[in-house]
Structures are given as structure tokens and as C-alpha cells.
Length: 160
Image 1 (cartoon, helix red, strand yellow):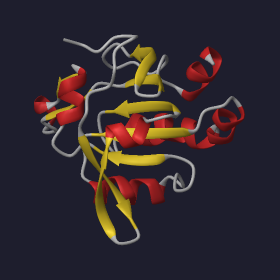
Image 2 (cartoon, rainbow, N blue to C red; image 1 turned 30 degrees about the horizontal axis):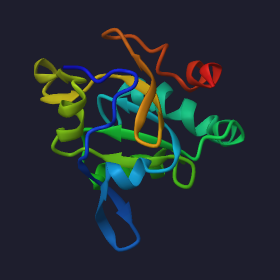
Image 3 (spheres, rainbow, N blue to C red; image 1 turned 90 degrees about the horizontal axis):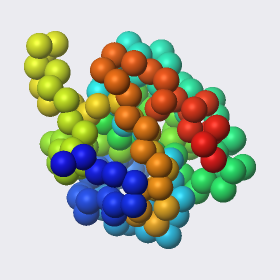
């Protein structure tokens, strides 16, 4: 079942890169007491994700902060090493939290997985964006397959 507006995010342990290496971060800690814009995508270093999706959020990171958003989080079914390297490549560090859902557990519990097996990618996340307030989904924008519109930074800024 797909998560919907008004639902609490699932409690899952994800990974992120720290100065000491990969470290766990729980969704409870990531979202507790904060307003967060989350965007998820099929994969780091993939064409639309690298050319448009992540760059749109890097470009508008300060605009989200000015609208009262505490954090902007990018989640992908990749490992913490890949997410960290992609964040560096895209100049996202310090602007966007690059969070790894390496096993796809969060994505599956959200009901937002897709099967990219025909492209050699296995199970990945659908492309979406959401506003989360203290762990509760306040807005959820899921893209149609192959589309990039409602999960963009511009679209999400327009909803705030």
C-alpha cells in the first residue's frame, strides 16, 4: 500500500556518510521535530536524476530554507558511498542530505518501489517528492513513469 498524506513515515534505519565513514540514521531522528522536503529518485548518476532532479534542489536549497524548511533530503536505493560521491559531484554537500536506502527497505515500506530490472537496476524508488512535518506526510507528489515535473524543486517550492 502506498503511503498517503496524513500518514507517519515508516521507522527505518538508512545510511549516510559522515567524516568517519558510513553511519546509520533512523527516519525517526531524520524527521523528528522538523519540516523536511524529501525527494527520491531511481538512482545516483542516472541521466534525469543527475541532469535535472538533484540539480534543481541544489539550486534552490536556500529558497527552501527561507520558506521554513529545516532540511532537504535526497533518498535513493544506492549505498552511502555512491550517494556521497554523487553529492560531491553535484555540489550538494552542505545543501542537500544525501541519504542511502541501500536495501530499499524505506522505499518498499513507502509502497513507492519500481522494478528497473529490464535496465539492470533491480528494485529502485519511483521518482517523487514530499513535504514531511515531524514525521507526518503533508504533501506527496509521485511522478508518472518517465516524467519529471511534480517532484521538481520548482513545483515543490510552489506548494509551500
